View 1: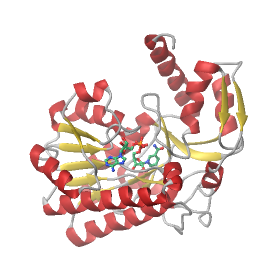
View 2: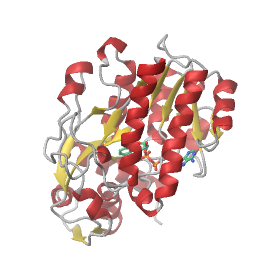
View 3: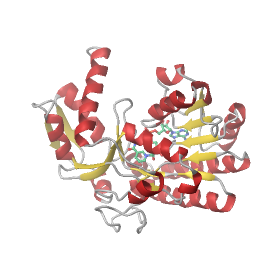
View 4: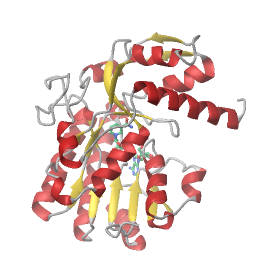
Amino acid sequence: MSKNIKKILVTGATGQIGSELTIELRRKYSKDHVVAAGHRKEPGKKLLETGPYESFDVADRESLHKVIGKHGIDTVYHLAAVLSATGEENPQLAWHVNMDGLYNVLEVARENHLTSVFWPSSIAVFGPEAPRVNTPQNTVLIPTTMYGITKVAGELLCNYYFARFGLDVRSVRYPGIISAETLPGGGTTDYAVEIFYEAIKHKRYTCFVREDTVLPMMYMPDCIKASISLMEADATKIKCRTSYNVGAISFSAGELASEIRRYIPEFQCDYKPDFRQKIADSWPMSIDDSIAREEWDWKPTYDLASMTRDMIEKLRARFAAEGPG
Ligand code: NAD
């Protein structure tokens, strides 16, 4: 186990990213040293059986404080959040959970002298005024969603806690994350995961964005790699304390459907854009992540072809093991 890391708390551990990141952290640093924290969503068997589990509301600072003390936590991966599409349906809840939750984590980290905090931002920090192709690290940030607003404010808050209190808080702007383990929880890029489930199960999918919609995406193993390698990088390399752009793959919904057709030739996809199209149209199509590559050697592994092959193999194996139904 790395001597820098004593005990880790993962909030949002029952979510799409948390459910896999927690297991990888337990594998890497010892299972008893990684506490998974959920809230209303039931934890899966794997999460419960591989290490400690707690349940609390991140907007409740006293509960967070107790859990940190109880387990002697010194590092927090704070993933609990309300995502973009759910956030547009309930902006008040998005502000409450995302801002009060992050503020509580940073305050408890400051009070308890924690070693470090990881908090993901998102490509949702960019709005229509930012360049949409090869979007730079430093550009105008005027998002049009409440989710994006909470991510911009969160980035500034993290930067403030580093500058003012010396808290070692690190962050990346995740693009849309694609994974085979846990379904996504209400984001604008959810179609890029749902399409695989529907293609394998029903050979049909109705996509909620247009065929020509291009967004930056990343496969889960790269998401986990980006998060852990940023946290393990030498502090002298981390010059950006708002949040790093990290890129991996960019493709249109139509290109993804075509790639899936290489494995399921009869797959049919049609397109019925809903309110999420407007959100997608305000986000970047591709990301310039040269600063993360230079400063802490970020490099993704998966491209569209290798991600699609792996997703189909994993989901087919899982559905076969689960049986019909
Ligand atoms: P998710 O919706 O799958 O999971 C979020 C988790 O937060 C859920 O398990 C939920 O139970 C928990 N949660 C919600 N409200 C809570 C509260 N009040 N108290 C405690 N827990 C609460 O989300 P995810 O996709 O796993 O996202 C994790 C992080 O990554 C979030 O910060 C999100 O903004 C960011 N992110 C995700 C993506 C993506 O494509 N998945 C892209 C960019 C950024």
